[in-house]
Structures are given as C-alpha cells and as structure tokens.
Length: 109
Image (cartoon, rainbow, N blue to C red):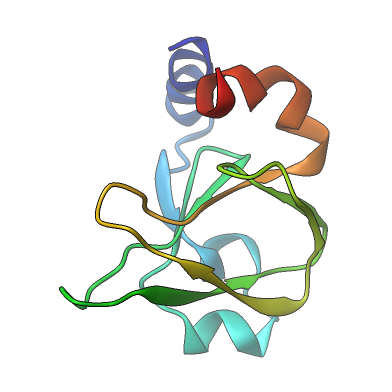
C-alpha cells in the first residue's frame, strides 16, 4: 500500500516510530493519557484496538483536528470521544480529514 511505504520512509528519515501512541504526537492533551491503547499508524491513521472479546461497541478518543471514520466516511471534529459499533471484522480506524481523499478507496473501495 503506498501510504504505508511512504510512512515507513518518513519513519526511517525522521527516526519517529511508524506506530506510535497518541501521547507521542499530543503530549499536552490529558485525554490521550486516558486512552493509552490507541495508536497512530503513520501521520494520518488512528487505530483503536478492541480488547474485549464480546464488545459490540468501542470508545475512541480523537485528538484535536478533523477526522473521518474510515469505515463510514463520517467526518468528526477532534477533541472528543466517539463510540462505534465493533463487529468482529472491523477495528475502529479514523483518518485525518486532509488525508481522506487519498485513503478513502482503501477503506471504501
């Protein structure tokens, strides 16, 4: 996938981890410390792993900025907690809004 290749190149060039916790990017945001299992994959994807086997929905904190639910295309303002349905085959993933046009086909196509 071109996104991962580009982000891997950036990680190598900058010594920043490809996968990183939210507090790596937002250390002054107290909410990220309350959601330690969420992580960024590169600069534009936020992944919120579901850790309870029978969970039907899962909360995700979106830091400041505009985000798009990767599975529905819904735009969401950051700085809030959103809850999403979590069927077994779908992990909550959010995309920075400015990157959505380039990544939309990965999730919806």
